Length: 385
Image (cartoon, rainbow, N blue to C red; front, side, top):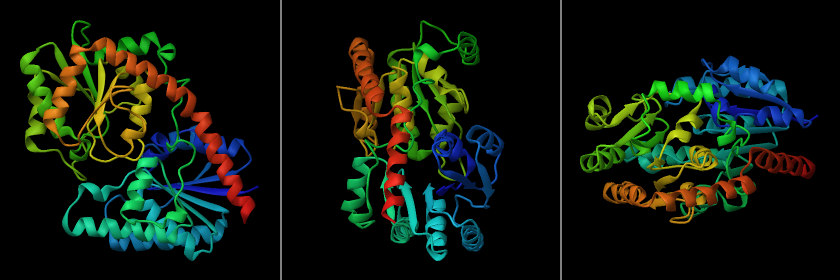
């Protein structure tokens, strides 16, 4: 039985980004071991996936001495476990796992790139992140960008040798679970609880944002565009489902003030049931500055929630402008405002776009389809050894 070690920096990535994937592989003939730092999500992950888990105390921040210790711990763990494949996801886990696996003699070292942090940084930090990406790619035997546009960006910027690059299937790290993300799966009781949580009013129009509340997710542009929209139409609301991450990438002081004080902004907090908010929303707005292949767009599309998003790598692999959603130039507050206004003026049109996107997701990104592509590629790599 082939052994796969699946590694992310923190357990929340195993829970949210790769949910169900480890169990699928274990149910289909692989031995799977999960690795991440400790965290509140860990017990849920182990229960949901039914796989062994090993803790390595990695952090998302750059901590040279701590990172060297984790590199040594991973090397020792890989030498003990003797995996056939080490497959990493998330930047810090990728760098440490690929280096440690190479040192330990693991022949198949796979890293998934689901976005590049450096594109939104400047100065010395940017140079460090670029170096880390190149070092990870050099240590890996296979690098899997999770979208075709991201693969092209990596090639254009000479981050990884082209021969190592491959997109699995049509893209996406994990697909979307349509048995969950579907209007027919909505539980009436949970829906009522969600409505109560946000004091839902059917006469209002809810624009929804789902994800970390940080600068890189375009929160500053979104809030500024929304304020302009609200000044013209007091029936609009901006519903934020997510949490602040101030230690990594804080929003501006103005954005924070608007979130806390503006009468049209509703801060719902973090939720593991975003489909209920999508079910209630008029449209999802996703103004992110960088993505790989965003799960939130697949989830919204599956929920028939119209999408307005930035024209960046990853987003453009899912949304085609005026066909399956609306696009605007990244960081362009004026264009974001215009697309939000367009959606208000053309509700039937954006619902038709959402229906077409749902059909495409059913054909290409249902989770079992994505998992089957990944399993097939694992088996091909193992057979070639």
